[in-house]
Length: 274
Figure: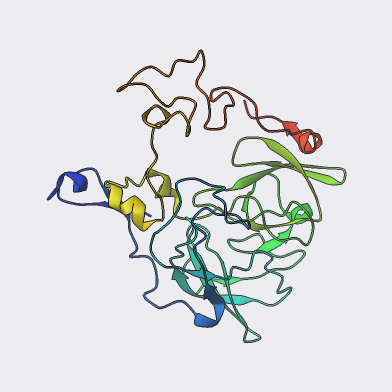
């Protein structure tokens, strides 16, 4: 996938880039595989803001994605490649031989007409899903399960993939997109390939309005706020923050402070990210 740029007819267009959608099939999404999506605007179940800078944006319908791909032994044909507004990856509509239709995450180089298969010991080819124990070491994989039968949880974003490093005992060692090596049960499933749309990270938004279309609201410096809203707030004009170290809006150190307790997941890591 390549990015498209435009003649700079306006200042915002000068550096702006967009994804090239020419590879996608020009069809509407299958209605029975979509559901209405109400915008939460960053609010949790109590109605309070839990994620700041969210709200507005274009209306979307949620595509129902098959992360388990549990049509065991039934081959499917790629009918369409489609855009999904709710994720960075592209999706593919699969027509199975028993008549069922499902959406899956589309790997790189997948094309309309390809056949895919999910089985405990499927052939090693693009889009096939099988157990880690039957995948050769060094193979690129995506949509990786962490718990057998739960469905894929890892390597689902555009351009990401894991790599099977080795098989030892009951576990497989998988190099995650972050660079960490993680222990996963050999009975977990993964799909062969890597997610497409790899240039997604290089897209230049170009103008503020385009961020609003995506449901992203503006971010404001803490020092521009009032003292009631942020530890950096207050003062006349652009004063210094008046603190030894920068703080988050909730008063915790903003730089270099470890906030994650990873005691529960530490035992599954073989190698931390360097």
